[in-house]
Length: 340
Ligand code: PHE
Image 1 (cartoon, helix red, strand yellow):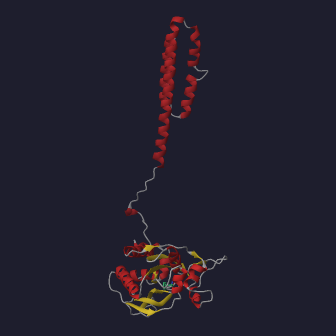
Image 2 (cartoon, rainbow, N blue to C red):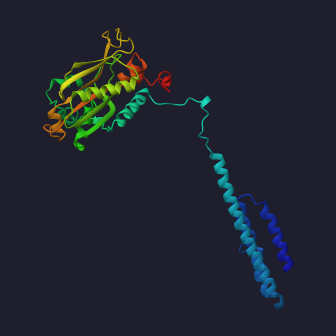
Image 3 (cartoon, rainbow, N blue to C red):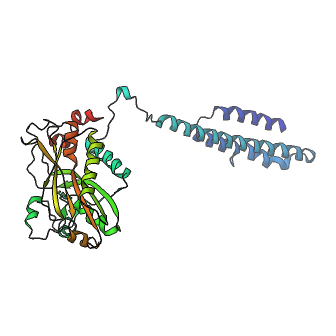
């Protein structure tokens, strides 16, 4: 009987070595160890074995049964691992790209300049704020000293939602939200997209970018404003650029200015971009109107401040000598690919 058991074990070993998948393994298990299998038969037949042999045969039988069970489980683990390895090797994705034969993306020139300006301002102690594109009438107009019937609204016609919300026309809305949260003294900038009803031409688009700035504290005056603007321009252009300051009207500043730079495309001679005047309106600015400080919960008797609204797309155009703002929104990679 022992021989019979050994022979069975040998047969089992041969078969298990040939097993290739879980299904084969399961049938092998039933074949050898199942209720109707030879091991069960042999162990059942123990009672007919001569008593002096019974113990030895029983032990051998159990030993072989355990050996088979262990071999089956070991084989099961091997098969599982092999399945995982196969999956890993089949689903392996090479995320490294060979730069030489690929078309790698890059930042849009507006983002490049925006991040650069953020760096310049944060190095001067400014905090960068964000605000929503969809604004309320209050933050976009009312709190900025532009009541419902004010003619200044005509200059900033926008897109209205049925519930009265609007697409913000300028980043000045960020000023108001900033004032509500901050306690003076503070210095903030707020870059972002703005929207207006515009007839697109070389310098106008219905969606464009601005970068708002606001400084509030005790004794803040026009010289602080001018110095900040000069520092920014020399950092951006890395050379002297002619600037001029003219009076400008915005209900939320008093006095208000238009800061122009000489057109970098024609060196001030006059071209289609500057509409033959040689200057580009780049940075409207001024001293924050007391009513605006009040809307932001700031005491105008104690504090004063300046604000500016830099035209980011125009700055990008001047910096890279781009003759039409519409290139910036064209989505044409022949254009944007040049700024990588
Ligand atoms: N918000 C104004 C505009 O978009 C620009 C501006 C900002 C003017 C801050 C003065 C101060 O036209």
